[in-house]
Length: 176
Image (cartoon, rainbow, N blue to C red; front, side, top):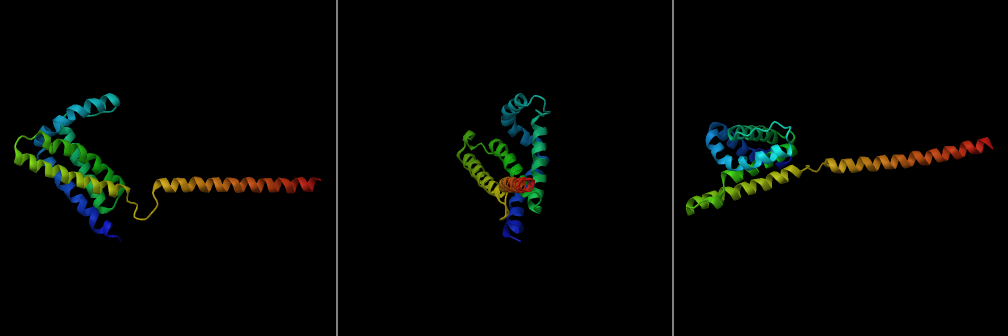
């Protein structure tokens, strides 16, 4: 077992379990911060996919995000679909960071410094999630497997064609 499986993934996941639980406990506070992001993103998403049932209430979106973070963190920590769960966590971290740590909007120097620190912490976590999302633990990824399968099919097709030509020559020789 690798150190990644034993320690790094569970350690990376803990912040999302804690953050998700905190968001569920303080949904209204998080929703107030999220509104500035949801008011921009939700209409664009509804326009892009009009048939999708996309909620517009920030509190509902905070709860969905919190649930996604808790489930994906549990999956990452236990090694179940680690690449997918890391991708889900990365996708959920971006709006969370933009809504919760907009240091550029702070007037107070101390508050700005604190929010900037949290923003860059989340940026660092995002980097770790992106690494986890592409980590194959030495095993080939899906793209490699697809290319390998296509090469195997082409090789087999060439062999079948070669065998068919040889058999046709033998059949022709027997007829004459």
